[in-house]
Image 1 (tube, rainbow, N blue to C red):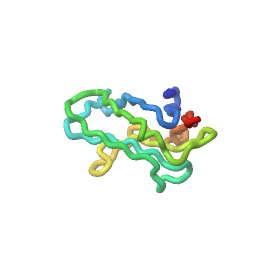
Image 2 (image 1 turned 30 degrees about the vertical axis):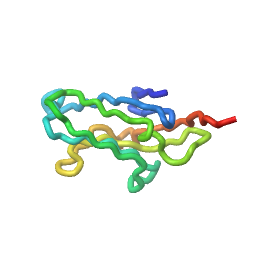
Image 3 (image 1 turned 90 degrees about the vertical axis):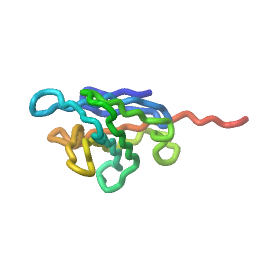
Length: 125
């Protein structure tokens, strides 16, 4: 399962794949990502931005107003197997190591939630 709510919360089953379409508003409308821009998804332990549980960077290869960030099955296997949903916080930044601009993140409405749901476990009988 993969779903993004209107409040930008992300819901995904541990071990599933997903693709996020990322766009940003600039001073003059929709921002046009430039070749070489870096987009970073950071997922953090809830209430603790110093504990990163997932970090994924992509480099923009052509000018565009929307970038696709893909999460693999391995990316979403955060931590140990779980038996109930776990909430993390996340943010998406543009050029985080040079001229960091937060596209989605903690704002006046609070943290952005990355909710991880339990996956099914296959066992040999």
